[in-house]
Image 1 (cartoon, one colour):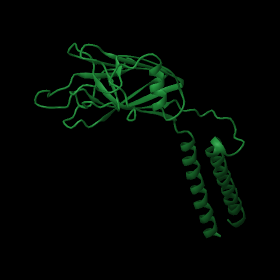
Image 2 (cartoon, rainbow, N blue to C red; image 1 turned 45 degrees about the horizontal axis):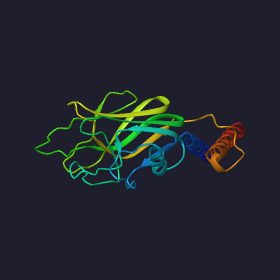
Image 3 (cartoon, one colour; image 1 turned 90 degrees about the vertical axis):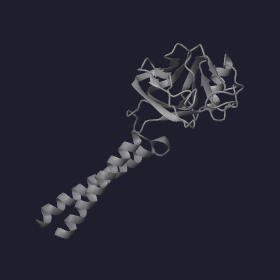
Image 4 (cartoon, helix red, strand yellow; image 1 turned 30 degrees about the horizontal axis):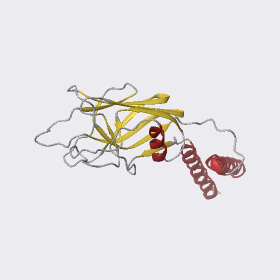
Length: 230
């Protein structure tokens, strides 16, 4: 009977671990990606109704309600810069003007990851970079700067908000020019789901409930076994 009790003890531990894993999975935060690598812009500033369309076409799902921009361009129509004559990305700012992107969402956002690169590539002529990115008034962060135009990711975390404001600027008085290929926003986690009716979006919760039930049964059998055999 001791062997039987050990088996139930192992089953109980396994059930508890599985329930914790499912619980964590169900509480995972939702993300929304904006991928501009298929933008096919024209190098000119994106204005008016093209602003919303640009972001909607780049979005991996829903959640964005509105977006406004100033001094943001559909690629680079110049033969200079880290990505000359490349229209599959956003280019922010000019040689004399900063840029701003303001996005409003239907749900609150807590983090944004921006895949980007400085206007220039690192070289003897341009050994250091001066273009910064800031989100929601955060401390300014230098854009990734490499010799071969390798893109990097800037991550900004902030208090939950429905509005995300991205600004680029330059510390030498010129415009903040940065290339952006992707943005990933993370929505605030929601652990207040209603009791599931089964399947669909509630599948993780159903699975968690089932595993927890197994844990309870295993515990009951173990307790009864101890009372009977010990």
